[in-house]
Image (cartoon, rainbow, N blue to C red; front, side, top):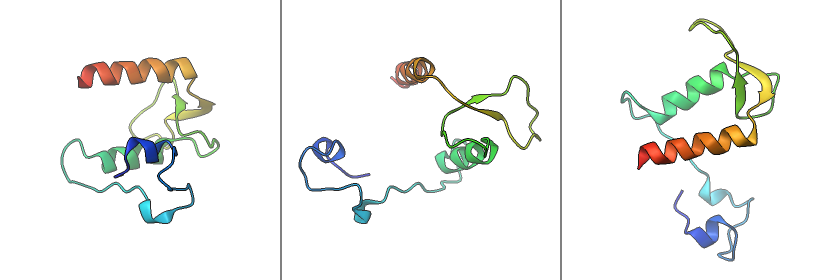
Length: 91
C-alpha cells in the first residue's frame, strides 16, 4: 500500500476505511518464497470453523491433512514474540 504513516494511522490525510481506491493487493511472483503462494497455502490450511486469522497449530499434522490449525486463536504474547523474532531475523 502506498500510504504515508499519517494516512495509515488515520491521522488526517482524508483516507477512510471505506475508501476503495486503495485496496491492498498481493501478486504471485512465481519465486520460491512467493508471498501470494504462502498466504494461499496458509488460508487453505486454516480451520474454517474459526474467524481468527492467526490460529493455533494442531499438535500433529501431515502434508495431506485438510486442516493444520485448531479453532483457537494464537495468543497476544505469542504474536508479540513471533513479530519480535521475525523483525530481528529480518534485520
